[in-house]
Amino acid sequence: MPLDRLGTQAASPTAAAGWLLRALVAPPAVIGANGIRLGPDGELYVAQAFGSQVSAVNVASGANRVVSRADGAVVAPDDLAFDSRGNLFITEVMSARVSAIRPGGKVEVVASDVPVANGITVHADRIFMSEFNPEGRIWELDAGGSAPRLIASGLMMPNALCLGPDNLLYFPLVPLGEVWRVALHGGTPERVIGGLDIPTAVKFSPAGELFVVEAGSGQVSCIDVASGTRTAYAQVAYGIDNFEFDRDGEIYVSHFTDGEIVAISPDRSQRTVVPGGMVGPFGIAANGADGLVAADGMSMATISAAGAVARPAMLLQHGFPGYIRGIAVAADGSMIVTNSAGQCARYHPGGEAEVLLEGLDCAMGVIMAPTGETLVCDSGRGEIVAIAADGSARSLATGLDRPTGLALAPDGGLFVSEAGAGTVRHVTESGSTIVLSGMQEPHGVAALGGSAVALDRGTGSIHRAAAGAGVSGEVLASGLPAGTHGGMTPKLLPGIAGLMPGPLLPFADIAALADGSIALGGDGDGSILLLQPAKP
Image (spheres, rainbow, N blue to C red):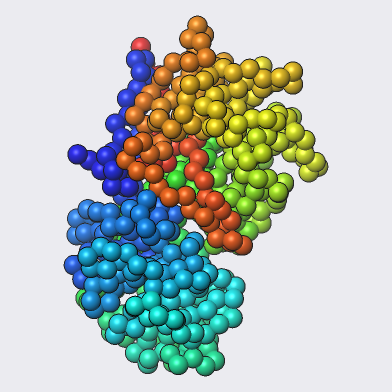
């Protein structure tokens, strides 16, 4: 029985008569890749903060198994490390704690009240951890859960750290583009090198050389600690999160943007251990005649008609508009997004996000109106808000039950999905009527051939309000990998205050394309599918 990235039975999509389904973007094996560590069994353990699970990957075959499930005791694991007894210590970046999975499988909290617990490393069974926040601290933890010992504080977002052969702790200060070090007994930290492009992790090679990975450029560099200079070692895709050496000097590099893991041999050749994919996907929208854009949480993706995925921007880059959920394309080519902080923003990749409206309770779907207004679903307040070019906002509809997705109707009105009520409404200035009902949790909605089409995330099906079918509509496809159905209920991620406020709610979206196809996001398995009319 094939399994999906959550370790549950893979979806079996089925299209109704007259329709065909095909994968545009294949499902990945993991849900983003953060900290990685070779375990005592030789497998590569992968923390997936935004999938809330840990997987173990066979580095030769790429086969993986779930170690800690998305509905398990460990929430949002970001980094991990083993001690000599086989204990696996895991930072929980959104829960302000560090947990241990004992060799028998029991999970125990070994440290709490450690905000944005992030990097972790174990040397001679001593455990060291960093907090990724503007007043970050570095701690030595006790494996049994006794009070931790403070080593350093007041650090600007220290990330994945390591102990050097000189018995000093080395760590990157991510937004400053620097690597620092501090003595184990504490004292004043000192800078080793600066001028790096979003350094996210440091480690020493088996030969004792300091390496650093730069998320902003995708460069893997070797640092001369004595002189504070660096030498480029390898180039991979940007969006690196962490890396790991094996005993022979091969480097495994993880990417938080898409979950790709690349192996770099000592001869500098590369191979893909885990192919990249979507972390969500969440909001999707048509981009030109045959392309798509996708809001993928920590990054923005473009998808070509052939299924090629590119990432023009990511969370750690200056100006990126937060943890993004809904997306639309404006007439000038800029992206209009909603985020977990309750904002709607305009963004050109590489630039600074312009907040169009903030203070939304729960910003979900977003579209552009022919008038030039931006229309946003505020799911928390049950409202559709229109934002004018001058920044003024007005309410278009209220009293809705968790409005999530919206689309322009042919008559100039709106189709709005109500996730709470299981309906799609046709909203006009004179009021609203239900055009689809009986769904569990409709999210994305689109207009196709004059009718409303909705993706029911609750059942993994697509419904159309066809003439003569009544408000129950007709089912165009079922068994879709949107949401999770019976296998498990992943825990809701609480987010990170000040960085990406939560909760980080899911959003399964659809988009109608010019050729009559419907693109749909499979947030359950990370795929994007196309539902296409069958050719005569």
